[in-house]
Amino acid sequence: MSEVIIVDAENSIAGRLASKVAKLLLEGKKVIVVNIDKAVITGKRRVIVNDFMKRLRIKSNVNPRRHGPFKPRSPDGIFRRMVRGMLPRRKPKGKAAYRRLRVYRNVPEEVLKKGKPIKFEDVIYRENPYGYMTLYEVSKLVGWIPIEERMGG
Image (tube, rainbow, N blue to C red):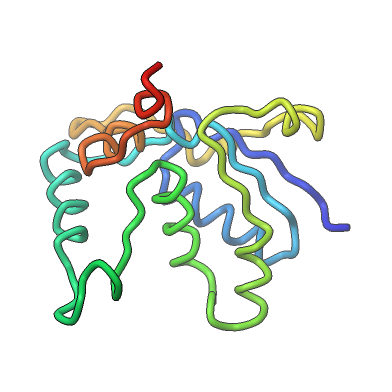
């Protein structure tokens, strides 16, 4: 059984956190990331949204609904894709590492039973002149609808 590490993503820079998580996964540890919708992407709001929208516009010429490329819109999906880009996902080592990753928008009760979440100090967001957006805000702007809103609650 591999070691389980619970990481709290609140106020963490998403890309830097993803690189730390990818490294832990490649070392053979199981990583659970919680509060991912509170992770941030730094930069100007307009630039961040335009970058994500540009990626969503890329489509297949054959049949875009069936042949992708399929891009995630939820905060946990976006973060999983970030980590996947940092792993050798087509090799057995990378596939096994990616399977050990779990990402949650909040902190589930069963995760709290496994241990206390840790925070990486070197990936915490500190003020910069350009600002930031949380993954939750980015997801809402690119078309993701939270389950709470879909269920009418």
